[in-house]
Image (cartoon, rainbow, N blue to C red; front, side, top):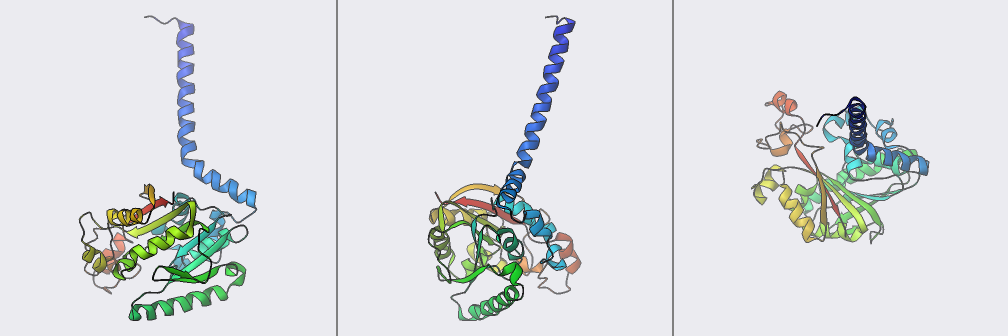
Length: 292
């Protein structure tokens, strides 16, 4: 059918408007989480996530790892807001504490549970880490003075009330330790009990290839997504999303010292160090679960 000139002009106009609408929708979908977090921060009068990440409390050494750990994208994916009650499990030296403490300082609550192993040898190492972490927090009360520090041992929290209290429970690169310690199910059960209904569990972990055995996971530090999902679901969680934010396709996951061959550990010393530096930090899964 032949379209006359006025109709053709209107058709072109409609097509152009549709294209602009689609472009706007695509941009909106990308920016919606960021806008929501910015609005929440302004509403609560709190430190923004970007300000927390760029703050002076973070060392240059910590910032250098942002290219691998993607803290902004990861916390946005985990839906962490400044007025929430957040529980981080096994913070280690406090890499994420440095961001979460100022972000939640004014309107939220940050509790940190240092993990105490059921193995006497590992528990001694945990004690040293915990002591250094507590000193760090005590040395900067303006930043960390509101952080509540407790422990997790054999599936039990101590040092704070953890019953149906938290909006988010977060753990970063710890699952492999709990498998080795025989506490993965006890810990996931504790996380479930600590969350409010509708609360979310955020998990980041070194990712193994499908088919990796449990013993290989223990030896290498890499864990399959299927293992994490199976055990989280057994604890009552529902998987709601997974992300490739922390993926690293360069990581073959078959290194002689497992994940510890890679930076920042470099367990092999100078042997093939440049090759491991070129790979960067490990390939990681990033999973979000909800407590129904």
